[in-house]
Length: 395
Image (cartoon, rainbow, N blue to C red; front, side):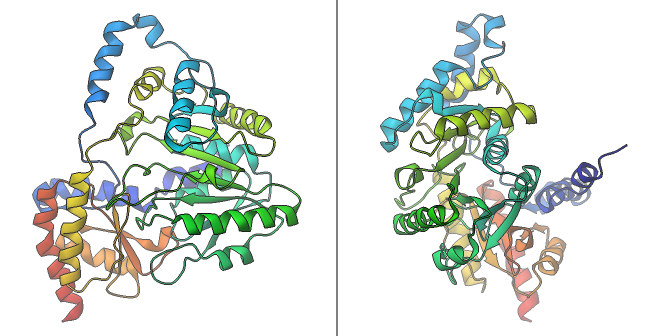
């Protein structure tokens, strides 16, 4: 028999992936120069030198068999020590190798973290807008995703609304900052307020409510914005990190789970992360990539191009009558649709070659996401299409 749940997931790709595949088809029909694909958050900036040079160095210096051999299920111990050392030095948070579990990217990290702390029927809460796959990961862990609206104007954390949503069935709150799709970076005041709320709610529930900090965009911030390191504000925190965006290596799938040693039952939580990873088939992240990122800690791709793209689009779209908040991080604009139905708006944009992701899947109808991690020349070519689209709705 075929598992109907997985058949549905495998058959119905995410809207983002559907648009990406449509873009490839459209390019073959009308020419890639006439397609402005803003669907996928695929970094367009070259990796820092440490990536390619590091791969060459590893191949030269390691015995081939050892380089490509299995590591421990949790990850290579020296890599985990280096990551813990980086966390201590960079953020001033307590960390040891025994708190770090290497994963095949952020998706595996989130799946393992949720699998570790969510039991059947429990709730996982996340503020809107949110990455759509959270629902898939939460449900696979046996939980139920509950979404909470952001504050009006700016997509900030609405602590009051979160407080109303969090009850005894809540196992965790997922925080994604910088946020995909809005580019919002939650402030220190917002994180402190959330920490105070969860301490209170955990006491009322009689069990810890965890923060899962999803941080693949931590290094991608602009104008000197600071991203608070959540373990420094709330003990019951699990960080899910990916090197995909910071090092521009999304296809390599490498990241980690960090369980704060201050968390209640931290040792058991970590072992449960290991067990969840085992059950999902995620043991032993790619060994070459583990060693590579260990030598690239603290390095990042040059994000000046993203910043330039951000400013170019913001200036142009605002002048054309579009409404959007200025993103503080990541590489997305979350733009208000020019008609109430963002799916209709996205469909009508296609005739101008614009591929924009409707905000419905992010829990925010009436918006579209624009991934500006693109070649600046493509963005320049697309501006006329955005102008024509705006003119159509305002005619």
